Image (cartoon, rainbow over all chains, first blue to last red; front, side):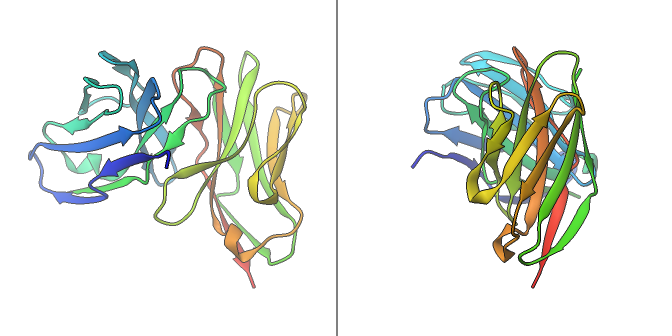
Length: 114
Length: 113
């Protein structure tokens, strides 16, 4: 089954404790991205990657890091989480970068930073 | 830059009634327009999209949307609401060469039995 998977689905952590949210897709997609969803703000892009070893900032990159060492994986790293990073996070992928391409979303990771 | 405005953060309809969710976009170049649906505790799923060609786009689950350039709108409709349509709906816009989608703030649809 074609899908985007994320782990963990739920995470509670404390301020300053480094964490990683994994994202994997099995569709051989070149393009992957991370979004955060906050009430009243919709989804905002954090980082994106057009292919292996090619990443760039989205609209809200502060406090986040990413890497793309393999085509299928695109982990999101919070080196020193803060309470304002409490949010619902989605990974997405598409075949290529392009305005008309359909993005496929993972199930989401709900993060609470105390 | 592109942007999307969704009018009404909450919409309630009776089962069997018409569903109309409003979306207006802003873009200086021809847009690509999307509607995504998010069921509780799930990721976003594409309902339909407009890229080029026919301005009336049909999607899954009986939904459709019409691209109206003169009104900069892409409203989502369904003739008869079903209980299973209760979800949050997001309109999004992109353009050729863009690196991301710009999402609206979402509309939560409630279906009353």
